[in-house]
Image (cartoon, rainbow, N blue to C red; front, side, top):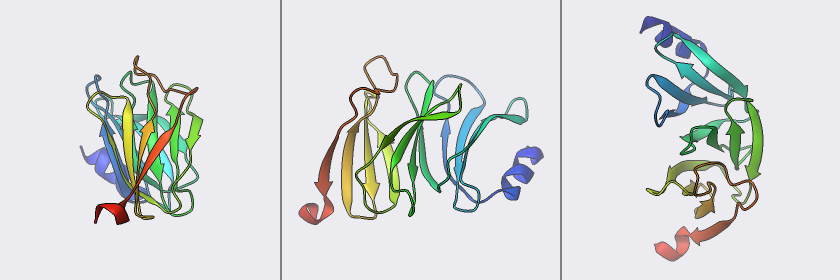
Length: 151
């Protein structure tokens, strides 16, 4: 896979990656401050399917359960979560609440809620995806936990 190694080396550091939930050889990557891109790679074909300028460092990436959307978390200058329509390559939602970079995101086992961890020392539980696996655009809410209370 020399082409992939060369291609990634040409860009900013890759900060996040996620395999497509059902399609073989499809990988989403998010890059750092110098590149600020979300790329969907087709490793079987040796090329990329989508390349989206996120205008911010990508610190995490998750596929929606139905694989029509990608959820990204972002760094210092944009400490938010964003939902991207994969087919159209557009940002469909911005989830705000953190005041410092998001350092990690994880999806619940039932594929509806997402937990984000920020350098602002808070955890947020987000209602991002509907039961059918699609991005829940009408009802995106969060519940905040302070790491101060956990220590």
